[in-house]
Length: 198
Image (cartoon, rainbow, N blue to C red):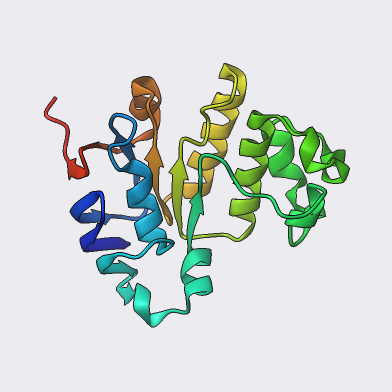
């Protein structure tokens, strides 16, 4: 479904990778190794070279907003630009099931962004991303600020969303999480992506 050929940028050596529908691929490695750079390059948020295709269609064949809607990127710290939570969503009432799954109250759409904890920002950022119904999820440590129960519900929401039709690249430092969630685990060291040796 997602095909990456010779994708490179400063700090990231050429990457070749195919991710099929239904796959969740964990990306691991030390801080500063290039994990976030890879996700941003796939999203075309930073200058890069190489080819990325979704369902056989080249990234360059789509307008940038269309690409970023189909290939949804969730940074470790999601951005916010309006005063309240609900203003960041196309259709806030339709998000109630996802909010409930993640333990967020239905009235949090009225909350000011300044009220949100790190974990609440992460959960709401994920709900906002899923609202656009991307075919590919690029997730940069989406559960790093969450407690164990919320991690479990977040993982379940993502697993259900991926199903058999979509795919995901998931940056994590948590070996146990990679074991639970990933169909494959890859590692980045000094900007070079490789299969783990063990």
